[in-house]
View 1 (spheres, rainbow, N blue to C red):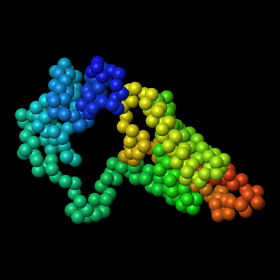
View 2 (view 1 turned 135 degrees about the vertical axis):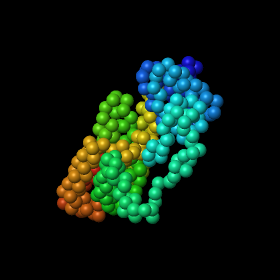
View 3 (view 1 turned 45 degrees about the vertical axis):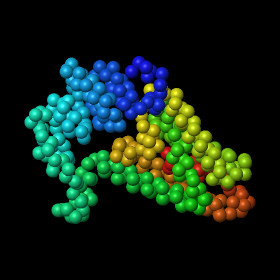
View 4 (view 1 turned 90 degrees about the vertical axis):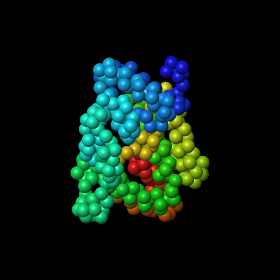
Length: 308
């Protein structure tokens, strides 16, 4: 891998990237190697090289546990096989486990809503897993948050701000990741700066807020890409930051989402009348002494808080 030492990992092919990742893993001298579909996106020749490398590590006494859908390849290289489809179907040596004998069980689909047990059982079965319950609760809290600010987004004509905010927090997340800080705090700081930037550009330049949103969104996202490029060993998928995964929500994340929901709901309730007047008739709102600009900025910050 010496010839690839000056290339960014994002510029490598699938096979080169897999070899680099395996090299980094092997260099740590761990006694247990856990691999999830290590041959995905790798050409046949490179697959043979990687499997031979893993076989050599196993022969040296290191434990190698690999998840794969390529049963023939697993039988060629592995010492022990476990066939799983929601349950253990077969367990033993390659000579004793014949996938063809269990093909019906391996290809068995998950039962649908019309299977035995009825619709309710089909719907409630996933709730037996803690991670699924946390994911469901997180989605419910997020839906409440989106409903709270969604009416104001429509009323103000800020149709572009949802997509913009979700991407504009990217530099804050990357900065927190590179400094080993809290990702949520980094996203929150970036969201607040984005909201204030949108308000400042809109108020001082006379541009419509959608135009200001586009300017700040592009600038912040570009800043995040630049920060990301400063990490030569960065390997995490970009979509993990931008999209996230509700199935990975922890209990602490749920408490944080609940806190944000209560905070946003309380703020919007407290300033509802002022926001309504500032939205429908900003001239009258200024005439009676309401801080219209501050109210607009506060609403943008609240939307940014929900977006991050």
